[in-house]
Length: 207
Image 1 (cartoon, one colour):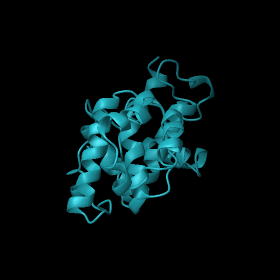
Image 2 (cartoon, one colour):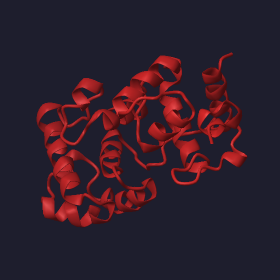
Image 3 (tube, one colour):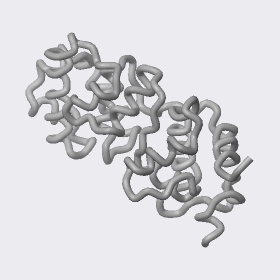
C-alpha cells in the first residue's frame, strides 16, 4: 500500500459518515445553497436558506422575486448581487429549458448561470449520485498538503485527485477532505500535532 492509499484509507476511517453540511430537501435547494456557499460558511448559508426556502424553494416560486427582493434574503452570504442574479437566471433556465427540473448531468448543469465546475460536481454527486470530485478551498488546500495533488488550479487538482482516488470513492473523498480541513488541517494553523496522517504528510515532514 503506497502513501496515497494509506492516506485515503485513514481518511475513510476518520470520517465514515462524512456528508454535506448544507441543508436541503431537493436538488434545486442544494443548487441554490451551493451557489450561496461561495466565499461563505455553510453555517451562514443554512441560516439564510432556512428562511428563504420557507417560501421560495422551487424555481417556480424563486422567479416571482425581483433581484432586489432576493438580495435582501441573501445579503449576509456576501457577493449577494451576483449570487441573486445567478440564482434567478438559473431558475429561469431550469423552467425554460429543463421543464422545471434541475438537470442531472454535468454538461447540462454547467450551462446554468453561476454554475461552474465545482458547483456542478457537488450537485451531480450529492443530488444525483454521480461520481465527481468537487474542489473547494478545503479540498484544494488539504489535498496539496497531503501530497495527493500539486496543481496550481482547482481544475488541475481535480484531475490529479481523479487519478489517485478510485472512482467509486470520488464523491466521498471530496467530503473526507473537507471534513479534515475543517476539523484538523486548518488554513492558518493546521493541528499537525493531533493529525493521524502526519506520518504520510509531506507538509508535516517539511516543516
